[in-house]
Amino acid sequence: MRCRRTVIEADVEKYEIGKGMEDGVELFSDVITKGWIITEGLVKIEREDGALVCPYISNRRGRTFIKEGDYIIIDDDGTKHVCGADKIFERYEKI
Image (tube, helix red, strand yellow):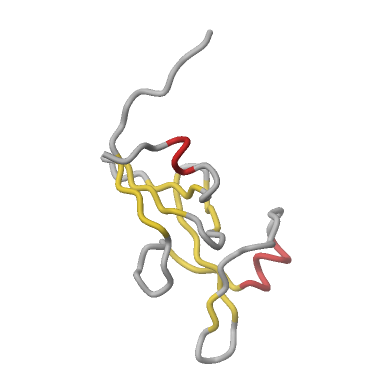
């Protein structure tokens, strides 16, 4: 069966540190040791104590860590997603 995504409007914003767009942060050392993800390009924020943390978005699939240049998508139903700059405007058109 072939299907097409239904049309959903969403807010799309390029991720910026300090804007509160993420759902949380994880220590970079934990991302490296506990995760099975590619860490290249991850946004890393240095805390005052020198610890590096990586911001993420939570959704039904778990945590998605934000990479440099990523966009945060919030669907009309409140569901959040992360999408790379290389795909964002193939999947979403400006209205």
